[in-house]
Amino acid sequence: MASTNYIDSDINPQASETSYLLNDNDNIQTSWLGRLRKPHLLWMIPFSVTLSIIMTSIEAPIVQFILELACKEFKEQNKGLSNDDDCNLPEIQILASNYVMWYTTLSHIAVTLSIGYLSTLSDYLGRKFIFRLSTFGIILSIVNMLIVAHYWRIVGIKMLYVGSIIQGLLGGVIAINTACHAYISDCTNSENRSVAFGWMHASAYCGMAIGPTIGGLIVKATGSILSIFYIALCSLITFLFVVSFILPESVPSDIRERNYLTSSTSFKHLFSPLIILTGSPIEIGDGDRDRNRLWRGRNTLYILAVIYFIYKISQAAQNEIINLYTKYKFGWTSLENGYFLSLQAFTRFLALAAFLPLLHLIRSRYQSSYARSLDIWTMRGGLTMEIIGFTLFAIAAKPFWFYFACVINSLATITTPAVRSLFTTYVLPTQAGQILGAISVLESVASILSPLWMNKLYNQGVIIGMEEIVFWANAILFIVSLVLEHINIIKKYLLIIT
Image 1 (cartoon, one colour):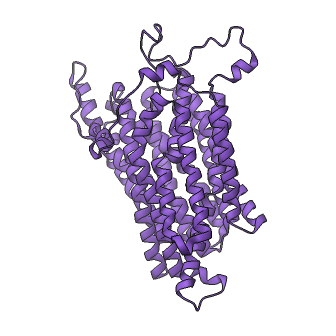
Image 2 (cartoon, one colour; image 1 turned 90 degrees about the horizontal axis):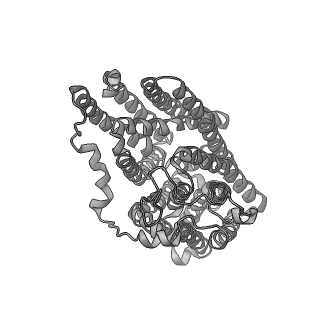
Image 3 (spheres, one colour; image 1 turned 120 degrees about the horizontal axis):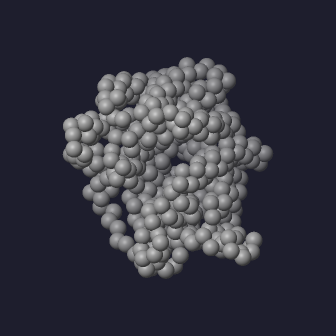
């Protein structure tokens, strides 16, 4: 969902690539109410916090809800089972894992198919249109979940997939998050944009640190897992009202009319951004040094793409597996899982809010070549923490050690910005947008494949009595990533790229 920083003399004769969409005329005799009604970064701060609280409050309950439904279905088919402990049977764990797997996978597939078209729509129908549409899709998904909860014997548990697909086709949280970035881009210039994105991410993580615990407390207080879905439904309806009638639009109507574009959702179009990873390097400059830089950078991109793909393929289904595993291993409820997810989000917030600004300070004081090596060491540190974290998940015999593993594993979130920065280092400045598009494709494919392999492996682990095997497998994947990083072209040719 690209920012609309237009260079059109008919719209704004003085516009440039670093200017932003909105005219900054609100400093002249503008009332406080007038300023409030103008699009601004500050609109996205409470926006991100609120949505993060709502969505993360139902994250763990959804898995618990599917597990309960799977347990009820299994008991219906096996009349001899009656007590609550029977829900921890391996057969029920496998059944619930399969439901969770397809619920997540179908949603990611639907988002992958729709996100490109929705991105285009936001440019000529406005950011608010995406906010409304995607929020409405989430509301429909929760309504569908409540219908299944009350009438699962009639409609079947697989009816949950319908809500998952609808939410994905209408964009879901991914489209809303992308529209938030576009909204901020419309309101800020290029010099302040990264700082603005940082504020939005920080506010989102604050909400993610609060939401899971709130959800767990509500479920515990009411004694019903459905209560959190009803509260989330009411909250989302209120959220939709605010978005529709209070939030100001960031794309003026005259610019939206000029920005009418066509979009393709064909298979070829979906994967076209990956061309930058396979195309021939562009020769610039007048010497072998520049050509060597590009050729070696191209080879490095292959390795970075594999590392980033491995990183993302272990992330998308991680929390769903952890929710199932901790219920099976420690008997956790939505409350304990809420504590876990809150700790995870809070640790990631500290890693991004404290560590990354420190990196930015270091980069501003040292040469750019050192800054690049700093990205490499940051990536290495993140991959190492992933290995340690997943190993601790696998060997944790008590909940305390599982929480400790969560902290180590969550600190590894510093890997993502480091890898993204390295991606842009090994392409031309004019190719930054293309390489970031390729990264988005890798993320989409990894999000689809992640629940497929992780849930299947978890199922096999439950069958053989080694359910922690999924954590060992992830640790091995990151060992492979670390080995690839050490043998890649970054290490051998770092001094050439200066």
